[in-house]
Length: 172
Image (cartoon, helix red, strand yellow):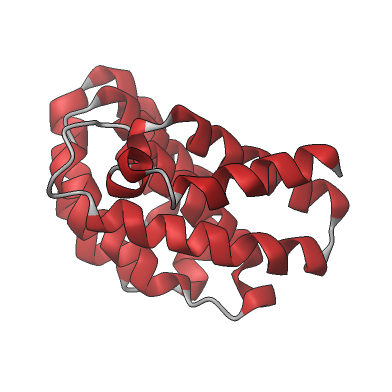
């Protein structure tokens, strides 16, 4: 549980650090902490761990979204995608409706970071991993943001074409 406490403290301390609080994506340790907490929650299959991590992760999401307009870093998308994965997989345990968070990601983050090839690839991977859940639980989300997905592919071209086609074939 030492790792668990370390990563949870990392998130907690980031709220007190003025730089990380104002621009969470500027601290790569936060992305690492979210990913590790996700892995630990998945491995332990513990509702208690999820319940303890969720408030910190949710606050980090809110701070990240609030910093989008001021941020010049492109790692916001990666951090938000890691948080969204946590919310999709564990949201039922903590009564988190992921729909507003997903819409916020597409509307506020991806609409700014679509030209970043790392964020674009991570987004397509996220969509492929979660396609079934997204289509069944959030059926209006993907049609609403499909034009943004086309823009993402137009900017990032051949590199993402196969992943995008894999996603769209199962989408339609």
